[in-house]
Length: 223
Image (cartoon, rainbow, N blue to C red):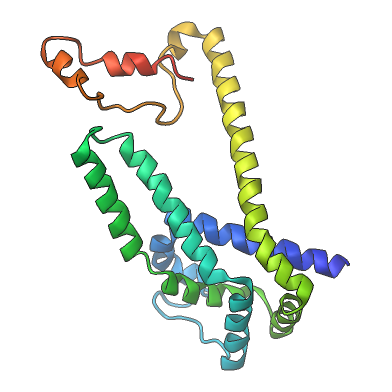
């Protein structure tokens, strides 16, 4: 039973790392760290992997759906980028078109196959041949297949619960500090609570002499 739990934890860890890497764009930074991630080989020189072990690793990745996880991470990060951009561009058709074009280009430029190849090297570095075969045996079983199917859902639910708790804690902490330090904390806010660009019709009022700082003043009431 302990061995099964250990394998499940390993899978959860792998899933979360892959998703986090995709959402934070760490894949683009990977070549800069090649010397450290490939056992200090010269940059650009990949560590050779035993063909039999590589075949086993790719079979394992297929069982646990690594490529699908990477693709899910790309989609999730694209939506995060969309939300951030929407808060910084004009709230009109041109702004929407700009954001949609970025998301489309981002998804085209992100290469999940390249990430998958990098994951092969990561598995090779952290697991021995025997461990890979053991993981293959587990994830090839009915229980292992259920773990592979359910863990992405569980990971998303855990991430959502953690995000909700973190948002509440940050709001409560900031509100308490603003109450204690009203002069300093008056304009303090977290995230992109509201658009920095004016909504339709507001730009005309500003052009007629209203202060440009009004949108920021509206934001100051946000935690």
